[in-house]
Image (cartoon, rainbow, N blue to C red; front, side, top):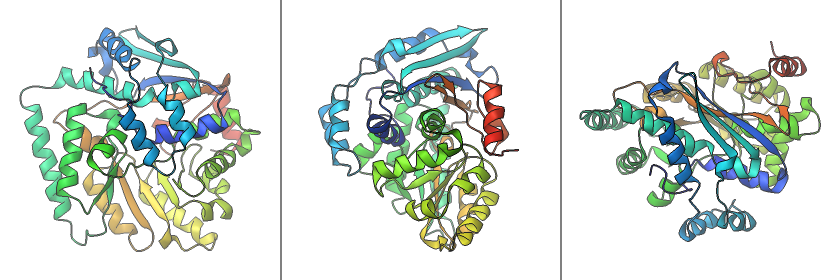
Length: 387
């Protein structure tokens, strides 16, 4: 059994789920699985995926896990009460093989489907890794992890370098991620600020890290009052839900410039910072600094979270470039959780519809743009003046 706890997920799934409970409890959504690595899924047995998902759907949150969630000040008591009786339902997920490729659709109430994404991706990633591993794989992973630890310890002027572990969705295995987080926490206590995985946060005492994902702003394209106001509507809903906690906004749902137009003085002051997840991070950071200057805000008190395909070397280069002008922080995922000597596939599960309407993500990196309705995508670009 690959997933043994519903807490073995990323924090932002739970924080978004709480906001869905309070603000979008009747929303109906569709998610689709997509592998960006051609033909990588042909070795993954579909029946094993089905069996693992069936096991996942038998899990419930345990009392001590609920107590842990209740201890987080931004998690509300009524939400924990819902989680006490929560269970994922198999009839909301369809898993099949189409032309030799894995095909997955998740459909149903947003509140009841939002927790599928991370564990399902973790299952697929681990099953793929089982087709690639040999007797040298773990030794290679250990050697690479130790090299990363030594690399961070050798950084000049690296006392302010901070990163969080973000690798759950594309990890080599559950056991490897747990071991890796424990090793990093022991070896780099001054640099590792937390993990996105709530289970490992609970077990290690590290802070759980995360706020919102693309799906929250995407859903508001359909759940909000007007499409042109959807980003502002989503950000306002987040502020009202968390009242100052979890104050990092995601900037690349409809592209950087559309985000900047919506992220006005009001939101610049309300949010603690911004997360970058696609495009050139150096160009993104400079543009965001320019925006804060235009708003007459001292960006030295703001946090920039970089989280797009980082390794330690690139994260440190970004730290050196932006330190002193902003508070740079880094979410590092696959480079930590699945660097074992073979190339892991790029796997995503993305929301494609809400309340019967297509929704889209227009990334700052063209290969990450995702929409199943080309007509809607063209309309969205027109409304937000995206070239």
